[in-house]
Length: 516
Ligand code: AMP
Image: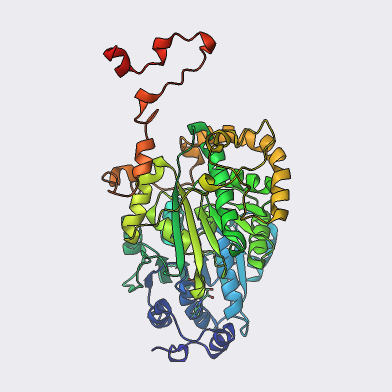
């Protein structure tokens, strides 16, 4: 097995690695570090969690240990799709450069230009940036990229999803032709292939096993759920989420809750908070200082529930997350693997639960096809839950209240009484605050384009066009519930609005009328 000491890394880098507690290089590190140190371009096909950050930072630091930066002319450049990833890469640099005198600057949105300008003016060895912010600095004439010796593109497939490829191409064009390029992507979409063919020169291709499989130490489950009415889907899903969380009790020490849309990230976080859960949202539209504070809180354990969009949470490395809840089924199957990979890290046990409404069943099939496993169906805890005390005019939960009244007879046992008190007193507030959000849910169901995370059209067709009809034996219950009124129209004798004067023939089914 390769050892770090076999890799020709700078002794001071080796010392930092040892202090970080790493025993041996991961496969992507063993594959990428030697060609990178030889000055070759590298095409790394690896996902987050494989140790890919160190596979480019360690050789970069070793190469940069010689020489000095000049004012406004960084010697190396790392491009990341999100601010969080850029900040994480910067942290990695700090860890590995602790015995070296290298300087870095982090150029991300939401941070004042002035501070960043001061750093750049002094001269930095490593510039870590999101593409938009880097180009802003360049256009303001504050940055010269003609001394870049090494350029890294991290998470290129996510750059593609976010529409950053034109920016990346432009940045490539601003750096010297002779630069060394280290390029990382989890997948090789045709557009990514094109970029690598254009901008990389005879790269060493290092591929580590694609993470199409989910870790065995993650317990997975999906609740197939159909709302009582379409316009109540959002509020009923939020209620279901609360029950899923409560059901886990103390096992759920902390969790990331993923939503497909930024609007839902906000709504779900707000609703959970109203019900007394310690939750905060994170997505690209939030102010950077707020995002940083939220993430720090979650990392340190002072925040229990992080409600997140895929982009904001992609690649985040929080070692102990006990649960992942997928409030929505992700529309790209690989995102499921990424999402649930936030739990069960470093050999720990983890749980991943998902809510699937009928319109998302095709996406669920795609996920099951990718992971080549059926995700176990779990019973809807609302069905077995006992009655929660309600104020009379509850709007949020009114619908499920009526449908569940018959089946609920006892109070929920999974919650602690303290939690109950908080949640119940929050009910009254949440009825008020969740009521408007129920209105937000109705248009959200249409999946309006502006509410979707920005995705380039190149990747993944809509699930509907990929799937070939429902899998047999998987969702009998759900199918029977599809369509207006279900299959049992003939038995539907409830006629609303006739009072006591309803003519009796109206209550007969068509079949009965015809027979009569
Ligand atoms: P990454 O894929 O770069 O996000 O890395 C995932 C996690 O693995 C980070 O917490 C790193 O600190 C850790 N890591 C990276 N390389 C190694 C290694 N060789 N041994 C143990 N842990 C590592």
